[in-house]
Length: 376
Image 1 (cartoon, rainbow, N blue to C red):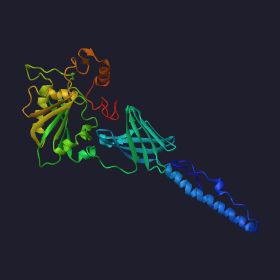
Image 2: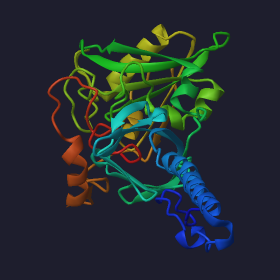
Image 3: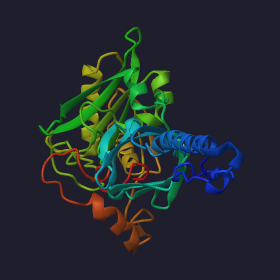
Image 4: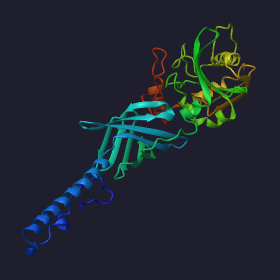
């Protein structure tokens, strides 16, 4: 009694009049038969509406919560969309629980003929998908810049993935502190201690200019999602905003030179800051076994390297990976003396902005910032 095109259950139901037309009148039955035919036609029309309208209503009900998981290469990200109906159509917010993000207002959310699209302009995010006729699943692609990932949604909530915020919160306890340096400057530091109190653990320290805790005190450092193995093997993880960056006090100096012959304890460099940090950690962090390793990649690799001159006795291992070393000879900005304008502008247009006061915001480390969650 209706036309439901394959794959287009959201279309308006249309009666097939040719198939539902009244049969020729049977003159031998008289008026009573005509009345029965009218009654039958009315019944069939009513049946068509009863069957068709609920299907239409169910098919168009995109509102509510949608749950998806996206394989972004090095990690799986759960993404939840909350959709509400508005006078102009629909509005939606997005949660990325594995990155500690919630209530992100999408720039647009559109449903048209089964096609589902949304955008989050601040992070350059676009999504294109198609819903099933009953709007119980959406199959599509998540795009951000030049990257694209399959992302499908359903109506069933998903369990926390290994390495996610919830997963980590079940295993480690977070603390934020300010650690005093020898010149009185205090550096913002967070550390994560395993909840198993029957053991003691070595400390892995990462010092960085890239914002260790953009999400706030109640959210975990996003890099924990890449460190599930480290957490499972039993380590205390410590992170620090280097001097003058984000929440730390003091003045920031790019690739701060080491002072080989310090004349007083008030003379500082990244080596002394690392020494003072390690000294505080082994004396104050619970359940540590007095052994510390320092690691970092790229710019944090520089801060790993400078932990070695005059190293603290508790420092047992250092892992500088692709570290920044000498910007004037063969490194990022000067390739054997030739200034690399494209690379320098791309980096310093965000990283080089002055910080007016200690802050957790900046350099695009969160959804609400300038850059995106998958690229730094």
